[in-house]
Image (cartoon, rainbow, N blue to C red; front, top):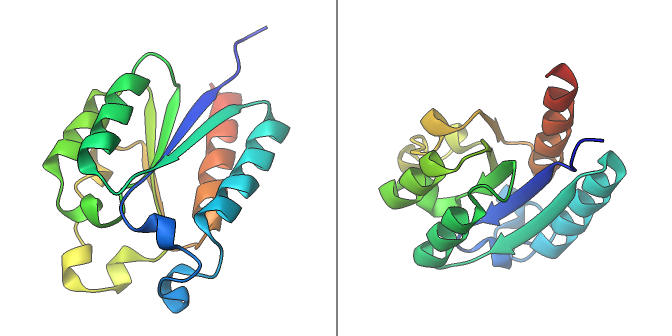
Length: 149
């Protein structure tokens, strides 16, 4: 029997404020509520999932580096660092598994500075603009890709 798929979900700055931060843009669910939905889906699919959030770029990078050869996939919402952090992008490029970029809002329908993602070019794919479902769509995509391989 194959080992369980191991997913690390990495959440960047200010996502700890979901539920109260601009609900018209980001929705009303808290990050903890999104985590619980993702955990339920991961468990149902037979995956293991770990979840983290930090407002610190250094902690995010250290976490990604430590995930190499320990996780099969990273689902990453780099938040504002998506548009500015070459260091975060480089850490994700070094990751030994697959990377899926997610965003709650459609970054291409927002301010011009949000239109550029430094992560997309090194990710296997991006899921953008589906609210909290962006995360669960990513988990389901991993399951479908596992079936295809």
